[in-house]
Length: 304
Image (cartoon, rainbow, N blue to C red; front, side, top):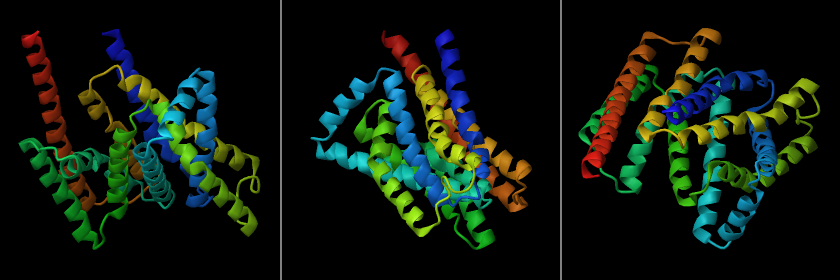
């Protein structure tokens, strides 16, 4: 029981950190989104190397690196995961710093549904009745926004699909999360360094050219990226998957609240109606997952 409580606290805290992360990006909104992304990747890699060394996982990391380099499927999955998470990070940073946090929160609300949809089309998984209803309700919510504003919510869909596809790529890698993040950032870090070098040559680089505060924030993006993931990794191992699914709505809810009340983004009646369909879809979806998890536990007890 204590293990479950600790797992819930660790996992909830990770989602809390992810929820308030937009505040961090707002602090550096005088820097372009592409430079923030390049710094985030580059410093995340070095932070994770330090973490692996301190946590005595360096040997595990190097052993996995040696074996993965000989497997083309693993290399492809690693490169794909790196590109997808970088795309997701860029869209999110850009959305936050262009005052579109409401739409960004929508993306992470519908992400669980998109992940299931990708499982159906790519992994040939089947849909339950509750999941079909959930997709229908979520689709209505997205369509309301699209037709009301005459513009497809590409930020929300881009975030949901990039993260959903990232999850699929991670299934192929199958490695402990801290080592996984190190590998992903290592794969793309050389490109981020080249890009930072290009910005320096062009005279547009903010790192080490604006203020000490800006430098610390850009370098600290590595820790800001890694710390929530480390808490999540520790917590998610100790609680059931359906509980993780329930807690994941903490982050987009906080982001939505920040967008509306702290940064005064528009949240019209149309937004409210659309989000209500999304929230109803997630209620049906989450309830079905909880019911399924309880049935499995009951069947396991009876067969024991």
